[in-house]
Amino acid sequence: MTSLAQTLSALAPGVPCPIPANWLQGRTAYGGLSAAIALHLVLQEAPEGLPPLKAAQVSFVGPVSNSARFNSEILRRGKSVTQIGVDARVGDALAMRTSFIFGAQRTSKIRHVRTLRPDVQEPAAYLSLPSTAVMPGHFPNFDVRFVGDNLPISGSAVPELLAWVRLKDARGVRPEVALLALGDCLPPASMACFPEPAPISSMTWSVDFPQPAQSSNWYLQRSSSLAAADGYSLQLMEVWDEHGNLVLLGTQTVAIFT
Image 1 (tube, helix red, strand yellow):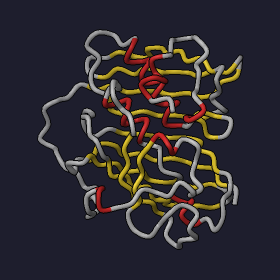
Image 2 (cartoon, helix red, strand yellow):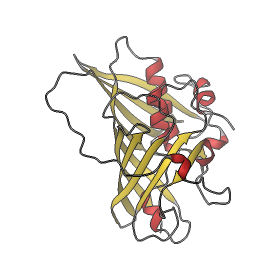
Image 3 (tube, helix red, strand yellow):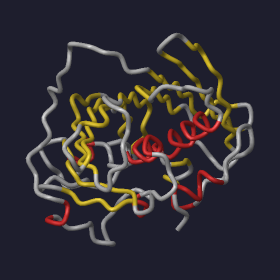
């Protein structure tokens, strides 16, 4: 199995990107990996003094295949905020468009966190999924331990998934890149309601980082579908590190085919 660090080490701007089989979802790269590749290349070429990552907007336009080429462009560099765009193309076709926002920290009297971390036990209290479970192709790269009775394709009445997750091998990967690679690893929350397997496709992913990323072994991740109709689901994604800090907050539009 090719690790995240090994996958990233083989990358170069403008050169066709090899996607290992264990990071594929059908005919496209796992979305978290595609976003992590874009961020990794941005940080490799980053201008001196680039502030911490604050946000990312990702549009999954088409399949990101082995022939995808990633190119970055500084969109604007202000006094405290820098925006950098990354396009991934397969041939002449746009496959993914990403914009990263980096922002310097400022002194402020306003400070609050209103998203509450679920009250759960430590990861060791929960079991990993059996190898026979029907899961996306990228799942073997992660240790995923679901909390509670809600599981993908369980016919649940509640469109929510909660799990402790970690990369099986994050050595040599910058914390913000590892967090972005991990942040999309759970199946869409609406899949908890699926009575049987059916295709899904992530369309957009908007991500905010409340604080500079720090290395963490385990992350608690909750995905909740806020609304679903007409073959689309809008979901909220929250990630806390093992110390209880909110480290990622995102929304995603997902196409569902059931």
